[in-house]
Image 1 (cartoon, helix red, strand yellow):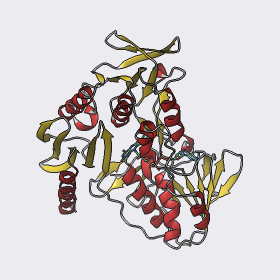
Image 2 (tube, helix red, strand yellow):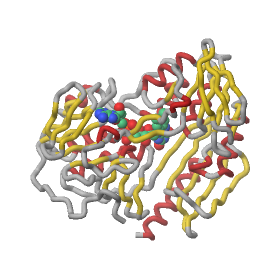
Image 3 (cartoon, protein in one colour):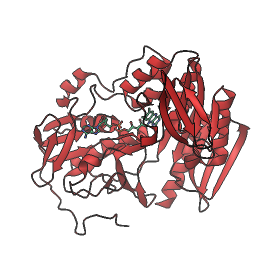
Image 4 (cartoon, helix red, strand yellow):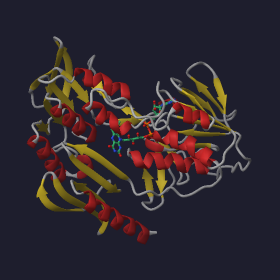
Length: 402
Ligand SMILES: Cc1cc2nc3c(=O)[nH]c(=O)nc-3n(C[C@H](O)[C@H](O)[C@H](O)COP(=O)(O)OP(=O)(O)OC[C@H]3O[C@@H](n4cnc5c(N)ncnc54)[C@H](O)[C@@H]3O)c2cc1C
């Protein structure tokens, strides 16, 4: 399959050794890309330009430890001195605003421009905020400072409404209940996580939340959020109105690719790349949550929002930049922690024709997803050892497909 906008002629292979690499982004993909360039012996200039004010940190903790522990700081992936040791020019609070492919220049938010021989786009995503839910003071969760803001308001006895029953919504509900807040979680779909895991599994996840004191309202989209006194009023599609002291929105993320409009890059729900992390333009690569890449095992374009995959993807982009192209074909893997129970997912199952579930308890079960008779994904709740075995099974299934 050829993605729309993909060049009809093969891209020119520039086999001159790069001297200047710019990595745009400040998450795990950007971090791993920059560090891997050095580990692989690249001795040219490496610039890491991040829109955030602190060095790359563990984003997965933003909805976990950083909410649970009121004193927790962001956990940096490396200390600043290590970037100095690697001779990586770490430039914070600096956003890339445009790319000129012909002159190989990136325009930056401080008005300067930077030349590149190779450019890695690792710009991740931002939370989706539907305009009708965008009242002043509504909190989203993506960056360390969002967590700091939310936890300031997390005072026992207050009522927090989470809009969105995905993984982040579930983790926020978990942290808030543990801090003694009253929590209502509102989900538009018939069940929590239904679009990703189906209604049977979603119902169990919702039950786990109810068992832990969360009021879960599924099948009722929130239509509007408005200010009311010091708090909010959340209007639901079924006509109910819920008062809240805090409102957190967790309704999905959008890749940060708007600034690339006009760059001529093939963009389609992400920066489209081949299996070697290369975009439709010469010398421009993409990795992590912002990239939609050709997965050779699945025979389709994939974009996943998983920590482990994003880091590996960044490392793969570094290798491709240095001419050591290796097909990027990971088994997508994700985890989440909710009410003291670990959720683990592995595989790729955007659709399925059969789900087989073992175990009855909402805090301990295994769901296997099959597509055309083949195991495509597995979701394991509360059984890490079973997960390790199931993951191996999936790796074997993928290798028989090659
Ligand atoms: C709250 C939360 C909890 C999560 N928990 C889990 C989990 O438990 N398990 C799991 O597997 N995954 C989890 N994820 C997903 C995981 O964190 C992401 O898949 C991963 O962080 C993606 O890394 P990335 O580097 O591609 O993008 P990001 O982490 O989004 O980093 C992108 C960076 O690029 C910067 N940037 C954007 N535009 C520009 C620009 N124009 N110029 C310069 N810089 C720019 C951003 O400021 C940001 O620093 C979680 C995500 C969130 C938000």
